[in-house]
Image (tube, rainbow, N blue to C red; front, side, top):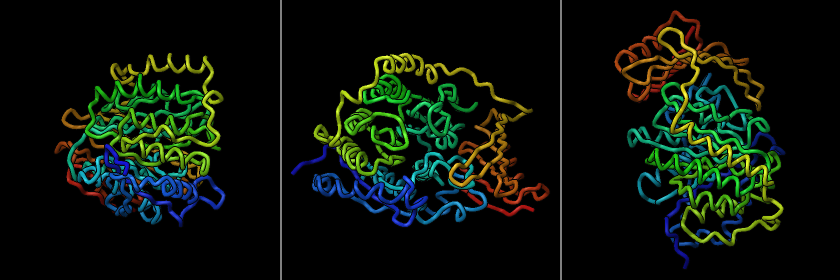
Length: 436
């Protein structure tokens, strides 16, 4: 019998009862062919590879991560809770040392869901990786965690959730935002004033293949990880950069994905995008599982794979090499950001469009420039669907003065907010109250 050199737990959740529409790329069939492929290839006959059921994320699991307006129940279906619970199950297997690694093959995806959530954007309602990370930190204490997002689309939601958190290193390798949704993820986006250099964006040109992706991994991602020394590495494992994906323009292969995970050695992988249901996902997911388990993946091939036809043009590869030659500076030598300041607060004002549901959000974030802690964060948010709400975040290292300011804002009743939510990481309190 074959034996894994690194035990791997696999969690499946196809979400039979949730799809954006019956013909939309984000639908249940995304994982059904993968399930069949795993059975046909005998993946679970390999000693050390085991299948596990997902858990269900509770309100508190979501509220320690997100400001959900008007409520968690209005944002999440049962499938969203179980998808996030599948990611939590992956973390539980690893943190309790039941398996060395874990891969959550779940849907709906999550990496476009930001700190504040009003609805679905980029097929995402809640950020399942971030929900998992906060579950880990609440139970196991303060951790240094690296999230490497290899989805073809920029992980703008995960970037936003951890924009101010120096304990989380977020690296996104994606198709250049000038050519693909969500139109962000450029090198100058490298972290907030309290976490400068903790966000790394690697925007690759269309038609990048295995060679370009692996060059970015070996020359940017791995050196930064070696310096950061994370307690955990998480692969936000989108697969829509595959050459057969119908909504993107890249040329990555199953062998490339497997090699990437072989080099990256993530403790946990969580499925994100990937919409070539028959041509890519069964082979890519098999390659990732074998690589994470330390098994031979050299025979994993798509039926129509031809390396010579997929190889990027020489000028594309040269562009990638030049780009990567400068990107490590955004981590090792980050340039001070041009952050707007009003009195004691850093201010960020934005409009965020929820493309799936047609919601336009207006947001004003104020982060206290505190010399004792990371600072209390106050987010005023409204949208075309709801009047102004307030989110208050107290960081895990919150000082008494910021704690008092946060709770004063939570208890105040003379402001024109219809809902106020507090996310208190220090005291593990996550609550709503109605406003006027």
